[in-house]
Amino acid sequence: MSQAPFPYAGDPELRLPIENALRGVIDPEMSLNIVELGLVYGVRVEADAVHVSVTMTSAACPVAELIVDDIGQGLRDVLGAERDVRVDLCWEPPWTPERMSAKARFAMGWD
Image: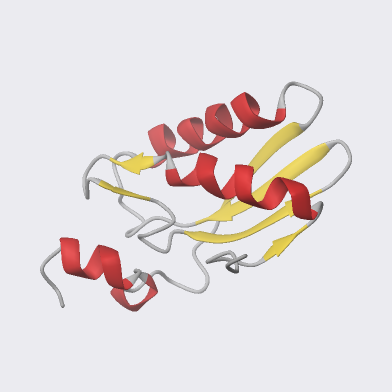
C-alpha cells in the first residue's frame, strides 16, 4: 500500500477512503485536486471527529470557502454523520509549487 501524500494519524482503514475523498475536491482555479496540488497538510482521525489541515495557493484565494465546504461534504459522504469534520485553514508553512505532485506540475506545464 502506498503512503499517503500528507501526514495521517488515525484508523488505518480510513486512510484510503479519506485520501480518495480529498482527491475528489477540485481547486476550480487550478482544475486539479487538492491532494495533487499539495494543499493538504495533514489529517487526524479521532473517534468523534476528523481534523484536516489545509492551505490555499494564496491568502487571497477567492475559492477558499468553496474548497473548505467541498472538503467537509466529501468527508461527510465517506465517514457519515457520526464524526464531526473540522477543516483548519492554515498559512504556515506557506504553500509553494514544490508541494505539488509531479503529476500536477506536469499538468501545469511546469515539468
